[in-house]
Amino acid sequence: MKIREATSSDIDGIAYVHAESWKTTYKGLISDEFLDEITVEARRKLWIRNFETPNKDEVMYVAENEAGTIIGFANGGARREPDLYDAELYALYLLKEYQGKGLGKLLIRSVAQNLMEKKYSSFMTWVLVGNPAIDFYHKVGGESVASKKVKIGNEIVEEMMIGWGDITAVGR
Image 1 (cartoon, one colour):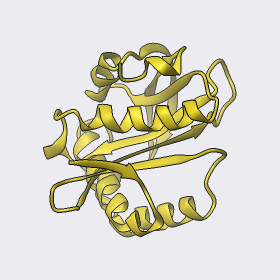
Image 2 (cartoon, rainbow, N blue to C red):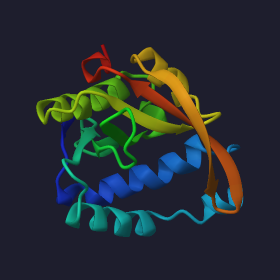
Image 3 (cartoon, rainbow, N blue to C red):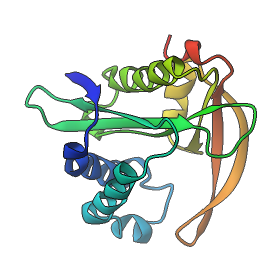
């Protein structure tokens, strides 16, 4: 397995992981109707736009298997909504069969390390309540800080903010 910085040539692999991960991770948390509408092509368009106009200091890493196929990714950058954290993990997704093997920790640590080098000092992410990844974020040093209601499709769901007051503690 290999973790490396993403390039625009990775868009197809990232889009596939993003679409597949939503369908497996959020099954039972978000309506099947909404999940059935998620396509690789739609995610591909989203990632093309993202690579063309990234947020301030945005970074992205991919995880590859032995065959060089993208099996996961993480991205982050400046906090999108200013508060007590200055950096944010925007996304962290791994294909289901590669979860629990330590790759998530390597991906989140890579993003945090890059942002640390850009002088960010704290870190946070939003996680859908009910997502087993909440336990993962706690294991890599995050603390549940707050929650908010958001609309996904036609449903109102709850997200949990996980935060690290000290970005150097991410993934230790």
